[in-house]
Picture 1 (cartoon, helix red, strand yellow):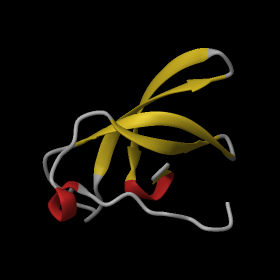
Picture 2: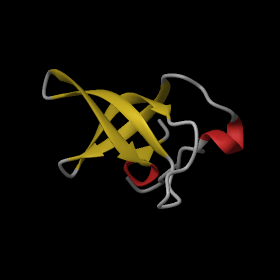
Picture 3: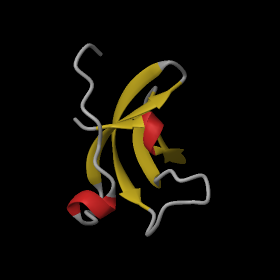
Picture 4: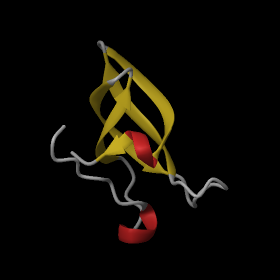
Length: 71
C-alpha cells in the first residue's frame, strides 16, 4: 500500500453510515465499510464498527482509525 489514504473521522467530514473503507486484519487489507462512533474515546482516537469479507465470511469488528483506510 504505497499511497495510503487515511479515512477522515466524523468531525472532519460529517458522519456517513457505512462508509467504504479498507480494514487491516491479520497483516492484510480487506474491503469493507465502517460506521464511526459518535465521539473520540479517552485514548483520543476515533473508533468504528467495521464490516468486511474475510476468507469468504462476513466479519464485524471494532477498529481504531489506525486500522481503517479509504478505498
